[in-house]
Length: 461
Ligand code: MLT
Ligand code: ZN
Image 1 (cartoon, rainbow, N blue to C red):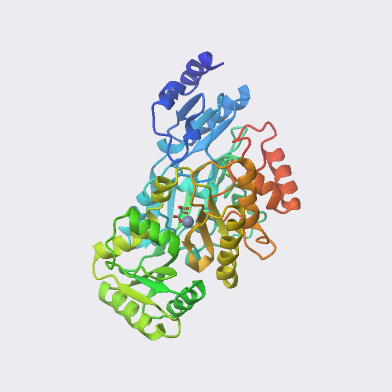
Image 2 (image 1 turned 30 degrees about the horizontal axis):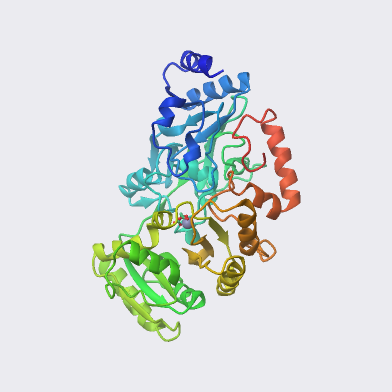
């Protein structure tokens, strides 16, 4: 098939960029080596090009995998021989920013960073932020319902999307580029495509809500005894009227120590000696106001929150050093290639007990296990990596998952907070997602994509 596939693709899609498998093999597949296992990659230039590619594949029973920044963390964009990649990189235009309505209409391949920059010109911001901002695309973020640093304030991608356009598995275009917040006109079908990882259609354009951005920001690094103490600080700043809390990221000691070593931070350069560290971001009209509010707020809550140590960054460079400690998570991969990694949501009142429980539980699997735990404190989203090289055996992986996911759904948390299901969490989904939800999801998949053309094997099979 492959020998005839490429010429046929080139004839059907004369304006698209097309790479065959040997070209794919020589290029960077992004975060996941499996991303470029396909027979071909096609990069259309517009929605009509995506629809033409979808029709081409549907007619031939070829499965199609949509890809954006290729920085996903659950194998949602992984491909196998015989599949075709629909690369959204050719749809990277910001079509419109409306400062009055505070909306942007963007093509799916636009990076988050590009949208942030374009919105900032108008004093606006998409209200969502994550470490991979330079590579993550809006389409990919929609497809995984990405969350990130500001989700505690503004919600996840689902809450930032007002409308979207998607190419369905038969080539029809579902177009709902609503620009308003309120619409109670029946089923809100755009939500089907959010978090669907390209299994129901390929998202091509999105209307994103924008919010006014604070004029300046200040950052502090605060040492605390536990998550509860860090939550007191968060509550204090959430109630502030002089400045706006923009980030509250937590690092447990094990992770913070790894990062300190990996980044070669001199001992004493930052207040790092505490069981937990909190990176706090505040936004205000000016840097002085933001820094002042951080200093005053920390002083006011110091005893009550049992703060161990803290420092308000006095320069952009110092703030950046604090953020690198939290965001340069590829250092884990360097220290432990392919370390098993997880992404859970834990209800606010249960964080300390959860971390203590998993630390103890993991030791019963292997006495040397001491997980790296960090994440988005204010919404309870923890990222957990095991301090060992991967991949571990299937049996071992399942045992780790049993420890990490036990009781999470019952407690109102989630085994997958913001990275999706992809291939890597398929079994966890089958074991931990509500069975009725799984059944309904299969029915929806069957209805919209009966030939299973769109990203087969992900989420529902
Ligand atoms: C993050 O918050 O840093 C991202 O979700 C990625 C990660 O898990 O490292
Ligand atoms: Zn995250």
